[in-house]
Length: 235
Image (cartoon, rainbow, N blue to C red; front, side):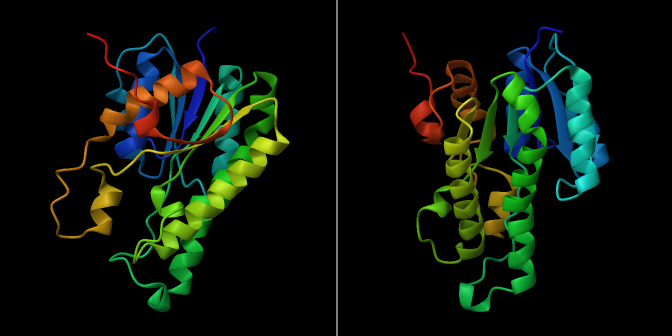
């Protein structure tokens, strides 16, 4: 199989699904992860036609057994070119001040947003090294800006960013990117603003060209914003 191979976590909806669709259009074979089996099956079935293979693996990315399944699925396709750590959680909602943040919810946010992607990356580094692959971690401006109510999510994303930064220094043979997609019209973003209209935010598909460009051009490891990567329109 000559198709490039990508693993996308949290791929049943939102940005993860949009990225899976974009990569399918580029000819990638895909291993897709999400917690809800029916949603993941439907998402995989609805992807654009591609010459690549699509392997949906439902499960919780915080589970070591599930991560091992993902590793085995990647091996079954012949390797890995791109790991997209997109699965995440907002944490407590409505967003509480740090003074009132339930510690158990904070711990869960770090488990999903930091420990799970680091553990999955550890597991897949041998495959990525063999193909000079890339790790793409989805981050947020909440990791670098102080927004009231966003302390739990922002702290977790800040930890993921620093882990990405160190990984980039330690693994020069691969690319490590951490990318802020900007505010998008997703279920997670709606959780942050319950009852509010977020229809002014762009749909996730709007930023997919930026991520496709990243994967194709392979710039140096580092932090990027999707807005800076959007291809320039030509007349």
